Every structure is written in structure tokens, then in C-alpha cells.
Image (tube, rainbow, N blue to C red; front, side):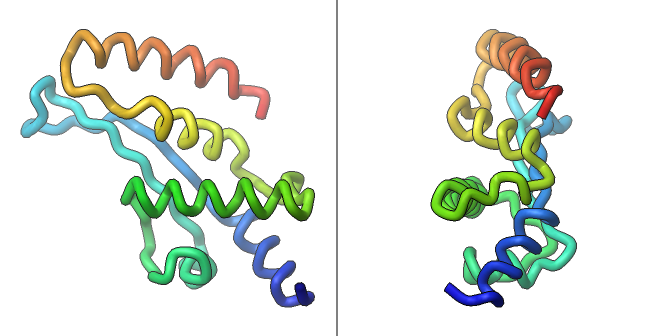
Length: 124
């Protein structure tokens, strides 16, 4: 690995931001839908991993691919300290493991679990 590679990793980890939110959606059965997003102020940095450049990524597969890349890279090179949005990463990982439900009762339980997880990640 060369110096340019590690500079790109630092730029990627410092700038990447993740988010999960419930969004009003009149086409959804219960009026809301879940949304995951990932962005970087320098989108070309994400191109190296995802093979495309966008301002905002919301595809589950793109987000999962980036999460896997970050985990493998940070574990291999012990660079977790460079990741600025640790809380966002944990929230997105949780949402990937706990997909948005399709019915109201499940949604209430999911929202409760989500709130509980958010309280646990406050210190990140």
C-alpha cells in the first residue's frame, strides 16, 4: 500500500456521513417509510469503492458495500480513530440488520427498538 491509498482512506473516513430516518410517504401503508442515506463532501472518494459518483447514496446495496469496506479497512489497518461519524455508522449497521417493517404493529416495535439503540449510541 502506498501513501496515496492511506490519504484516500483518511479522507473517506473523515468525510463520510450516514443517516437513517422515517419519512412521511403517502404511498406507504401506514404513512411512513424508512430511508437510509450516505454522503461525502467529496463524492469522487466514494467512487473508488462503489464505482459510481453520486451526491447522496440511498441504495441498500451501496450502503452495505461501503459499511463492509469500512469495517474491513479499519480492522486491517487499525484506523477506526479516523472515522468521524461512528454513531452514523452504527445506526446504519443496525438498520441494515433490522429492516424497516411493512405493517403498523411491527413499525411501532421497530421504532421503539430504534429509539433504544439511539440512546445507546449517544456516547459514540
